[in-house]
Image 1 (cartoon, one colour):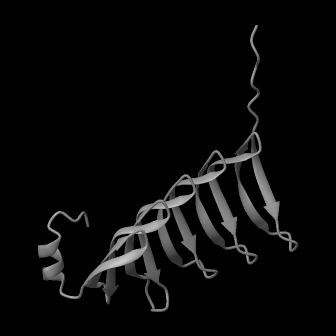
Image 2: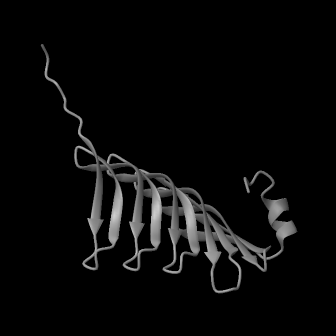
Length: 149
């Protein structure tokens, strides 16, 4: 007979001093896995998303203390990846203000900036450094015909 590996999956909760839940989700062998929630001390959700082997993985959502969506995007191996969407919560209704492309936790690709729900500026980044900017969207589209927006 070979060695047996015991996998222990349990639901885990941590609490604030005020008794409200701080974090909750599944752990396998003491590593975060599957869907998790992180809460503010007022009980509202701060973050929610998946873990894999103790690292953020897949799509995550981040909220203000008033339960307004601040940003959302992908993680791969605990690093921001692909498109991220940033919201303006100062107005009476939530609006998209920016969309960024990330690779390995750095801006890599395009950043699209919005004003009043309209695209007004585009930027290009390589390894977190801005390498291009367009304020005329038709010029941006002409210069970047294959951009995956």
